[in-house]
Image (cartoon, rainbow, N blue to C red; front, side, top):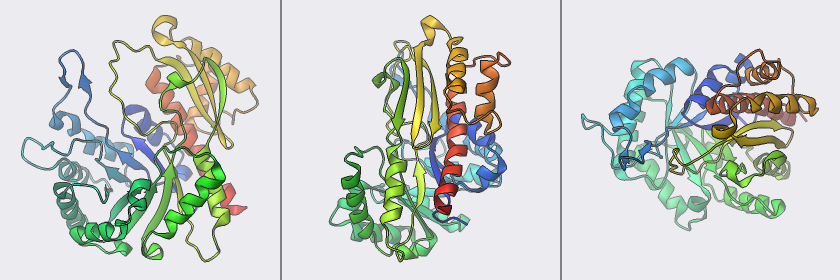
Length: 360
């Protein structure tokens, strides 16, 4: 059942994220539908050009998606790919991705929005017609605030040749300023009230995040950061009338949705652990790994375990890694390792949080 007890984690399809999905427990897998944002093509700062061609960038996606998330549904969005890009054979990138997913027996639903160009919408319409699995419409605060939103949305549905009953609606708050929380919830309520035919959509999800855009915003040491998106969601659900449709919850896990081109030759990323707890994140930020190495993760893990906030090594694959790292049973790993650890734990934790909140 995909209702308000379901969870939609929004993930960029990079190694840390897809490995985190692969290593989830079966119960968690059964209660989520990931929204996969295909990452942008990297930039080669030395040559001042894209690091790969679009064919190289997307070539392995279909096979890898099916291997890491086999026989389970996911939403796939290519909004981060330049709309002018075309595959060598002329196909639109989203058409290529879904052709490859289909060829590898994957299950996926395309994502689009009211602001996508005609070529993207046409390619999406072709996928819908061929797969007959529906479509996900992603709506932002900016979209919903537009006085012409209802007509723009209907125009998009017409281009796709679909009705709301065939569509999954995701109201993406992205990364707004959630404070003051009470006022923000009232604003979200007013925008939801303007969403047309809300009861008819196949599913309805609200997502967003308050995770910092960069770790550079945080000081070295331990910090507790509120999960405002989760706090807002719970307040929103409690304020809805019994007759109102309850949205599912979605978030950006332990990341920020903004993508920034960074010259890694000039950056010294810190050794950090992003660990989700009740209503907040427990974040340990260490020194940069280039000058101080990754051995500092051992101390970070020990600190987390002794904090009283550790969920236990059997809670998730990520938690097991934290415990083993503290004991010296596994190597400290790389930055990608810790994105996997944080993402895996977060998804397991959020599935539990949603079940607990829904039962209360």
